[in-house]
Length: 184
Image (cartoon, rainbow, N blue to C red; front, side):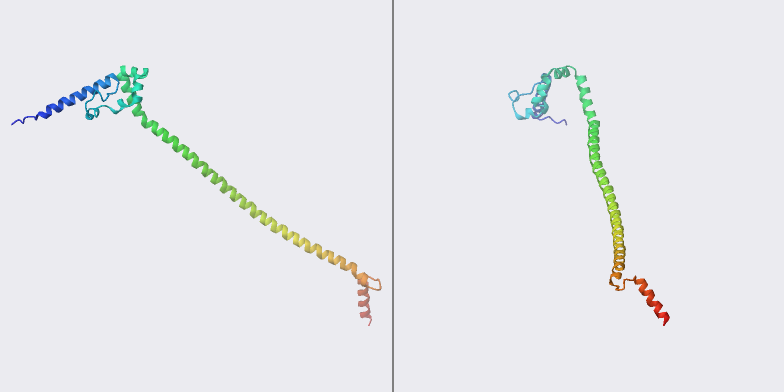
C-alpha cells in the first residue's frame, strides 16, 4: 500500500538541489548572484540577503575579507565573539547613558539643593535684617523723643527767665511766693 510519489515531488527536489548549488557557488565565490544566472524570482529567495549588499561584497574583496574567507574557524570565532560581546557592550553603553542621566539629574538636584539652602539662608538674613531694622527704628524713635523732650525742656528753661520781669530765677520767684504764704 505504498503510495506512489507524484511526479512533481522529484521535480521540486531537483529545483531545490539547483538552488542549493547556486547558493553554495555564490558563497564560495564571494560574489552576488545576478539575475542573469537565475531564471526566476524564486531563485533569488535562497540567496542570502547579505551577499547582495554592496558593502559586504566590497568587504569580502578586501584583504581582511579574503583572509577571513580562507580561515573559516577564525571567522566563526570572530562572529561568535561579536555576537556574544554585543550583550555586555550593550549593558556597558546602557550604564554609560544611565550614569550620564544620573549625573544630569544629580546636577539638577544639587542645583535645587543649593538654591533651597540659599533661599533659606536669604530668608533668615532678611528676617534678621527686619528685626534689626525694627530695633534700630525703635531706638531712633526713642532717641528722637528723648532728645526732643530734653531740647524742649532746656529751651523752655531758657525762655522762662526772659518772660520774668524781675529778672529773678523762676525758682527764686516760686520760693519767695511760698515763703509769703507761710508768713500770712
